[in-house]
Image (cartoon, rainbow, N blue to C red; front, side, top):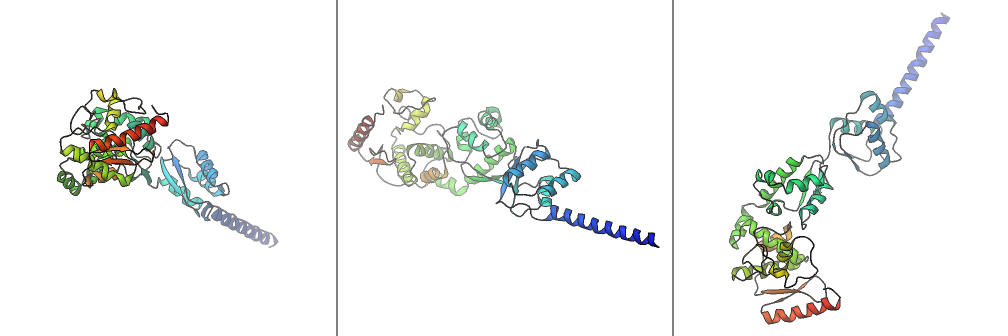
Length: 339
């Protein structure tokens, strides 16, 4: 009888201890452990579980990761590439489940207008898992572009700068196809009709927008600049846009466009060839595209940067007015030691 009592007592102790251990395990696994604000884990799929735990620890040094360590030890964790959001108040179980199931959260990819392919590739690559060198190579691979209906020069037309949502581990093929789809969506019937209404194709609109964007960084000035070039274009005048000459030169950009530069033989040189260049000279943003589609109606034919270097321009309707403005600007350049 006495022996039986000891057995009962021992069993009770084991049950209590087991309950305590279970309660402790439950707390470690299911109670909130993340105290910092939301952060992301960008995983390439090659990380060891210990590296993932260390990444979480670096983001939240106060997090008690013992529950997550237990889950990894007993249930394993197959690393999946992707961008995973870890939220304030997440439990070890929530984090493990998100990572184990590959439940990543899309990232907002901001694509800004820029001058060339290397800069475009760099900004995309900095926000996605895709290597920027691979992006640059694809954007200059004519065989790959053929399948999308574009050429190397019209890549500037294909990508519409905007903010998009992607999964961080999107493939390069899927990214390119999405850019074509977004381009087609941007150039809806309304915009196509607007382009036709001003006598331009969508490609020509973006080509002119790329010139406008090179001429001015001031959004409020863009419709005026667009209207100036539309006046010249509609009158059959040479556009004489310095940015097209700089583009035709290639390589290092000169500080000043000189008479020798104007002799560059290139279809992009609007001092030598009438009309618009064959393709855009940069990736143009929606502000400059909309400025062309809704250009200001006025009589300006000439423009020159203001002599105060504010980034704004003096506009003129006659060559004599323009020459006066240009003289003031050239004098300001010389005074500043810019040759």
